[in-house]
Length: 336
Image (cartoon, rainbow, N blue to C red):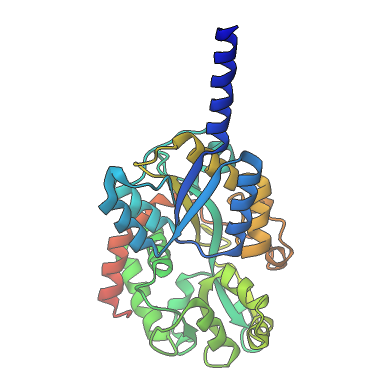
């Protein structure tokens, strides 16, 4: 009888321990969809999610400083370049999961499993419906032509999204052609690079520029803004996916990995599996205007309204490995 009671007690304690498990997540993401999903994960698993927010650079440096004593279990951030940076810093551990391999295309995860994509954003051309015909647009490379002089708006080269776009162009065309492209696009800008992606769309809507280079989800934010002027901006522009007859439009991910210091590896993997599951992917599309990692599975009406598109299939880890080269090319091109 004592043995039976002891076994029952151990079982109860084990169950309590599992239900009382907690995950510490360091997150650079700032979207309402995440809070919804974290709460849903807790309700479904009993695992509480504690979130520490900060910029990617701050969180990566914090993990480096904390070392093996870091309480963090998961790092979430945006852009494969930053995820690669975290991997190179030694703060993410490789994990293998059948569910993650099923949920996330190979091109959108680290080949060694240090990180996995969670959502997708395409870096597209947003153009004026009044001044630009879609037939005028073809590829990223075409933006280097003199016909676009004084017509392009784009943000600073210090921005990781532009660095990753250039890294993809280096991968496709080589560094020499990438440098020529960056120099020509800089000459074709209507103004020196400034502001956010949304500011580039505003410049197009205001008639200052004809075409902006920006991420799709920012247009979603404008279209659903509480500010009427921003909703008007979204109405005045349209989306064009470049390079559809070639390699496809440049895409990037937000994603996550299990930290090297994690004391809850099993739960951390379960968390990433949950975020990449079809149900969670639909929530990202509806609330943060991001594509699912399986782009063809999109269920968002807004994203669908921009039309289907072919995405570049290059493994996104290359965006990280070529980041430093991209930064140097931008500097040589005079792209501030």
